[in-house]
Length: 203
Image 1 (spheres, one colour):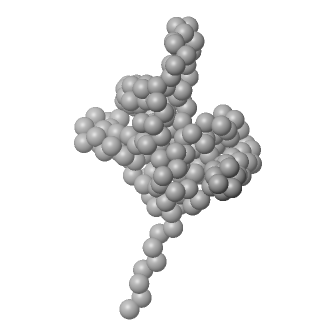
Image 2 (cartoon, one colour):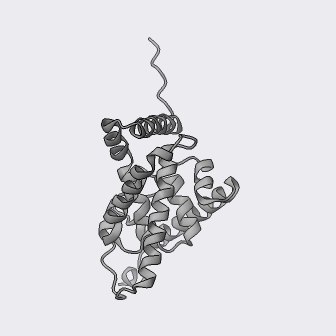
Image 3 (tube, rainbow, N blue to C red):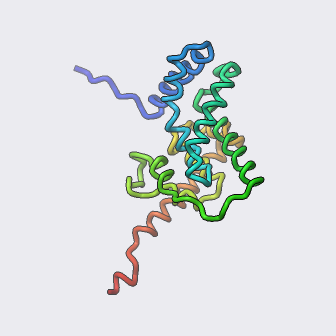
């Protein structure tokens, strides 16, 4: 008996994106069940993406809600030319950008809330080179914005490089370079974190 080959990760991702895009198109036509499927399928991705872009973890849930409100209000303009996930993440980025501009007009106190809640939400599972206990968000915070976004889109959210490039308004090769540099920096930070403290070793 021949066991059917399991689909590769990128094949599973493409299949999921096709289903999500179909739900978005059905939701555009007024299918309430499709709206529910669409929101549930992408809620965690939006939370992760917003958490990595936003400087205020307390605002993550509100920004995610704003993203979906904007998306549902714009579904009539969605034609499926890109995947619904790419379209939604572009809306999330604009929501965060608008929030940042609003915050710049109304300065907040310098003491920011604890990063732990957002770190837990954004923590990947099964990503090679990262243990569950590592607060990846803290490591990513040290990366330049463009490298962090490229890494989040491709390595955490699983977008194809072409879609990440379209979302970032840059060539695919640039995204690949940013991801490679981000990964090298993160691995170096992890290696440094795992090295024993010389003072403790000498004790």
